[in-house]
Length: 224
Image 1 (spheres, helix red, strand yellow):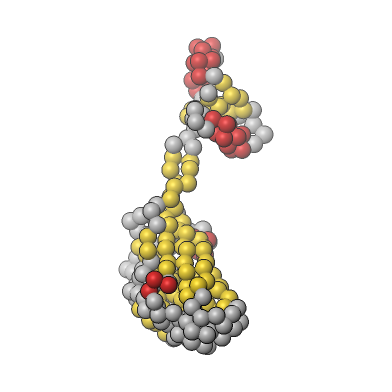
Image 2 (cartoon, rainbow, N blue to C red):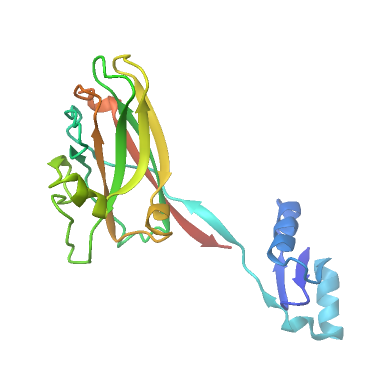
C-alpha cells in the first residue's frame, strides 16, 4: 500500500508488517491535508494517467537507541556536604564522535549508614565551555572527588538534573533517577559533559561500587 499527500506531493510505501500504524503516522504528519491510501498496482496505473510520478518519496524518521554504556563515578564513599560544594565528578562523556542528539541517564545512588532524614542528593550535569576543551571551575574530565570554589560558582555552570529525597534513616537504601541530558541544555547536546553528585545526608554514601550504578543510553534518529 502507498500513502500519498496531494497537498505536499509526497508518497510513502507502508510496511507490510506495520501498515496500520504507518497510515496513522502518515495522517498525523499531514494534518488537514488531502491524504489517500492506494494499492501499489493502482498507484502504478495512475502514474500512466496523471502526474503521480511527481509525488516524491517521504521517509520515516524513527528514534534509535545505542547500547547503554557505563558512566564511571568514583569514589563511591562521598562525604556529606552541608553546602553541596563537595562531591564527586564522573568521567567525561565525549559526544564529538557519536553525535547523539540526546542521552538518557539512569542512575542508582545508595546512602550510607543511618543517614539524616529529609536530606537530599543533588545530581548535576556540567559541560565543557569550548572544543579545547576548557572545563569549568575544578572539573577536569576525570572521575574524582571535587570541591567547588563556592556554591555561587557552581550555580553558574551546573545544570540540576535530579534531586533524590532521602526520606528515611534506613541504611544502604538505593535511590534511582532518570533524566535527559539535552533537555538541560535547551535541547542541544554538549560537546562533552559529565556528572557532579553531592549530598548533605550527614554520613558518607555507601562505599560499595556495585551499589552506585550510572548508565547512559545515546539517542539518534534513523531514516527508513
